[in-house]
Amino acid sequence: MGGFLILILIFGAIWLLFVLPARRRRTSHSAMQDTIAAGDDVITAGGIHGTVREIVDDLVHVEIAPGVVVQVDRRAIAAVAREVEVEVEAEPEPEPDPEPEPEPEETIRGTTEEPG
Image (cartoon, rainbow, N blue to C red; front, side, top):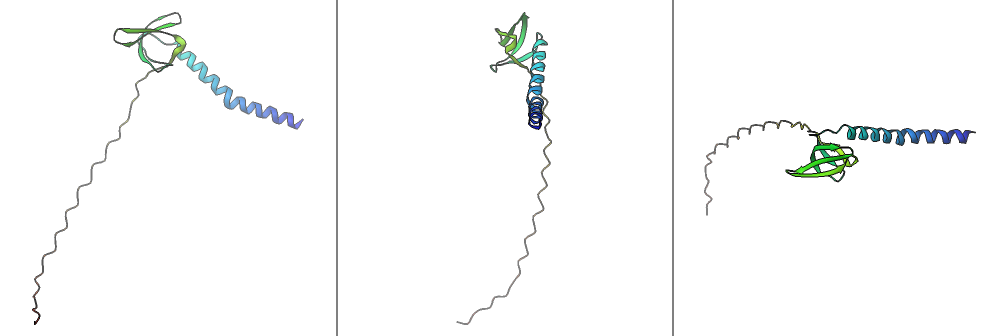
């Protein structure tokens, strides 16, 4: 009986860790595909970026270049492109150069002549 309980707990943990998150991702992705509208910037599953021009049933007309419109299946839309705000850190001001140390004054030393 104890072994059976352990198996149930293991299957429950696997379900919580793998199945539930995958189901949530799938439903949110499906909802995103259902809410696509004309004018949205999208990215297809093949990596092509474009702008939605028209939606007819399950076909989405995507303009990928000026005057170039392709038809893709609604399920081929991988993501709706969004502007990403990039926060740029201000560069720290450079520290001022330290004042150069004054050169030591030359000392006058008497010269001694060696007898020779």
